[in-house]
Length: 246
Image (cartoon, rainbow, N blue to C red; front, side, top):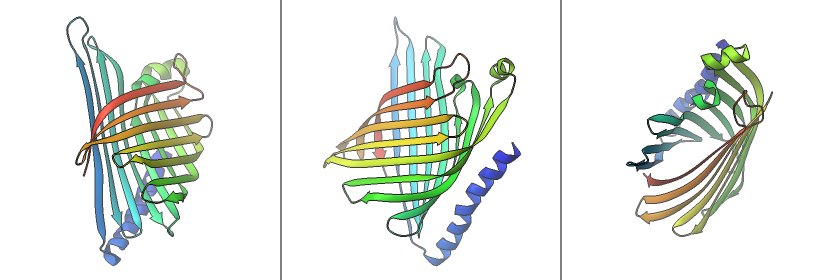
């Protein structure tokens, strides 16, 4: 646990400290974000409900770009919770030049259906923009990271240990392109490879409805090469949400 706290503290302190200096020198601030919400309610012979919410914010300050992400998923079927997942993450990018940057990030995820109370990851490394124009962007990131996972009480009793941690190789690929003036396609892939492989793929299509309001369709696939006993290695999530840009 001490390793986890130390890693998270270093990851957060580096960009925030440098950002304070940039604020004094540059004084050039920009802020933007997206709020996303979707829900399904069914009553009668079938009583189900599902909710998906997401808040993604970016703050540019001189050579720094900070991103803050909050996500939540909740599903219930006949008074039984069938899915529950919460995610919080922060990333700071320092631009070296028009193409290259250094990144620092830390994430925290709660998903009791995987057998873990929570998963925390921190990483830092190098990023590069292969394509960067108004219609299409392609960038990749790579660097070392650290992952810490705490098992829930029931799983810890079965497995004989209460937590795992590992140094990992962290990699990200982001692709985004405009299909038309009112629609956009995005593909994001994240992988953390250490004692096992944890990967996440998100494919989405966004179409503007009116003004800053859009409809988003997304397919998310999560993969764990060594799931706990009784758990599946692959989780999939398909959702349709309303998205508001600000």
